[in-house]
Length: 204
Image (cartoon, rainbow, N blue to C red; front, side):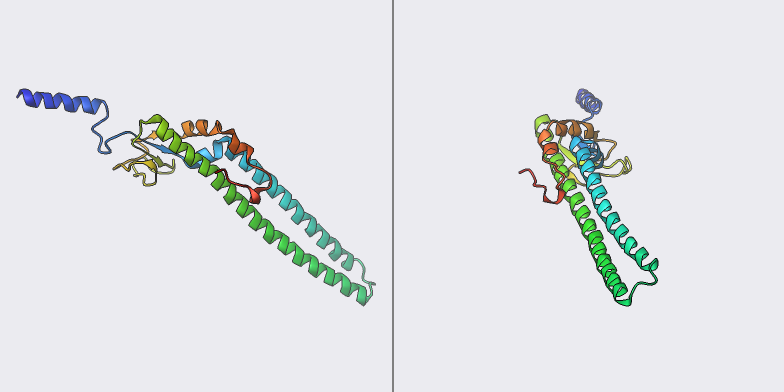
């Protein structure tokens, strides 16, 4: 009877401390979409992309205006000689070809720029998560979490540490703000973001 009473006391104490959960330890998660959007490096990357897009769009608009100008010249000059008209039409064709290439190059540029900047910032965030995990020493593992997930949906993408059973947004700590705060201390990540996006070099 005394032995059973002791076992009951131990079980109650473990339950109070939160040690009787099926996942058997303390886990955390990071919402990387939020971290990417809210951290200083992510904000700078967004401003770089916006500026790059504005520049590319300006180049496209200027070429489009040039084409429209020549087309109007043809329309408004019915007395133009056949030879001159032929030269103008050829010039328009070349401008259209150049315009299409400019649009295609701009799309490729922006796609590469977005991927490179996103990867650059994400690598920094992941490195920060691993550093946080080591320095804190309180978590069994840290997962990637998304607020779109149900509280009861099990997290599957482990970033660092050991996998647990039944880890959800509900029974894990949200350390997104902590990671953003720690990552923002790394000023070199912001300093290395330049407007020459496709040629951005990653930090080793």
